[in-house]
Image (tube, rainbow, N blue to C red; front, side, top):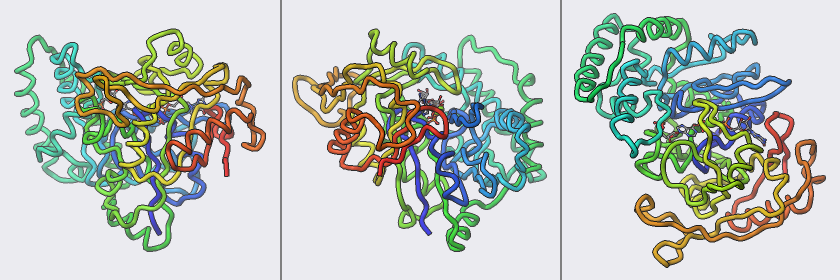
Length: 423
Ligand code: GDP
Ligand code: IMO
Ligand code: MG
């Protein structure tokens, strides 16, 4: 059995949580492979909206294992809050959720370092979610990190104290940065106790044994390709590999075992936080998309920046990820637009380009658009793609022609049921 992957092709928030939830009945295991509580994955069904940060989006289905892989970073405080929100749904977390012993822990002092570093960057700040993601991955690659497996060791507290001491020494170098670490530590230690009571596994062994036994696995990405540490709009990115290759390193899956790669994107484009966004609309059209699409962050509540779809960026993402099929989300958000625009190339220094330049941050990138007629009807009640307006089908065909990958799913609302298979 191969591992299928679902990941974002834009700057995150494409609707990964919704589609993982929709696909979960076809799988035995849903596995998160990177990121941490910077993610906010929204699922909606039976009139209730759920937002998950660390826990995979298959958690609401019985008989499915949800796995937090070694590539993920976990904040025990956020994690405990997530569990508390799930409590009314009577999910047997101990048997349905397994956590890699090799996943790294976000310490309260990592959050402080994130905040101090962002404050020191001033107007060049990344716009991080302030969840401690960057500092935690820095400690991972710097070989200082604490891992989930460490919480079971007798010298865990010593290791914790040693790392905190390092962090406090670094914090001294930031001007005017005040903090009260002791105040944050109680909740963190409580979260560690909760983690200790759950199921920690050697997740690479677990997953490879499951594959051998014929189990179907779906890897759930967080963030999006344009936020990837290597291939995104560096330095305005997150600190992990959000791309298909991240599945291999974040779960211990060999490259030859990757199966279908489902690339997910919005019918337009959004970004939250700082950094280049060539198709951003700073006018009333952007504002209309924000209002119609309720484009406010699931994790931070920040307004998301909105713009038209960026095909060169998506082609790049498809190339890097080896995408085999596409899911187009939030088509209904464009219901009221007479005309939809798609960026097909850029002009950079008077020269046409069909991919983002290296120095995207310092040169002017002017998008070149094609106009596509809108459908002008409410899509939210659609129950089959066959019944969809021709203009929507034409938009999908247009995208398939440019992207050279089939669009197999079109989403027309936040609910599980508002999901159409096109083929
Ligand atoms: P994720 O991080 O990729 O899981 O995406 P988020 O949950 O951060 O953001 C997607 C938002 O769009 C959520 O509020 C979803 O409930 C909502 N959503 C998902 N699909 C659709 C859709 O097809 N139409 C509309 N209107 N909203 C959607
Ligand atoms: P999901 O999984 C959208 C953005 C932040 C910031 C940059 C770095 O819900 O799609 P970080 O806290 O990771 O150091 O922030 O990345 N960012 C996201 N944007 N969706 C996300 O996750 C994001 N996770 C991080 O806004 O610009
Ligand atoms: Mg999100």
